[in-house]
Length: 87
Image 1 (cartoon, helix red, strand yellow):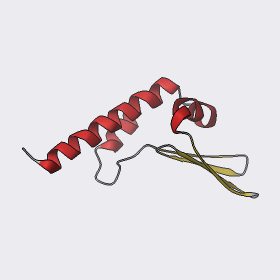
Image 2: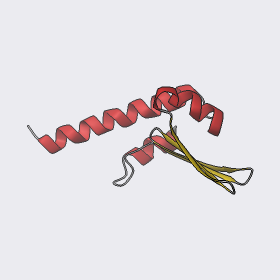
Image 3: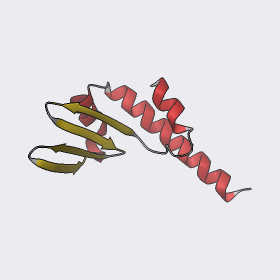
Image 4: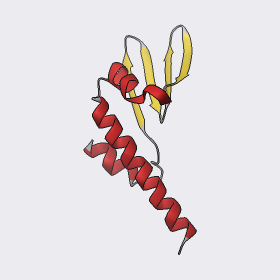
């Protein structure tokens, strides 16, 4: 969680991103899109409605950690939007 928290404040890091390699496949999650790339090709699916469970199954990260990271990301996005709009 600490690493995600720090990464959300970096200029180019404004999304949830997790990657790993397992059994010859590259597994990649960007926000709510889960992609698997391997010898048989690329599969992609939207996991918006099951984000915590998909991250837990795929990356073995506790769904509560994913929920907290997503909530933090959304708060930071909202704050940036407020700053851009100004007073």
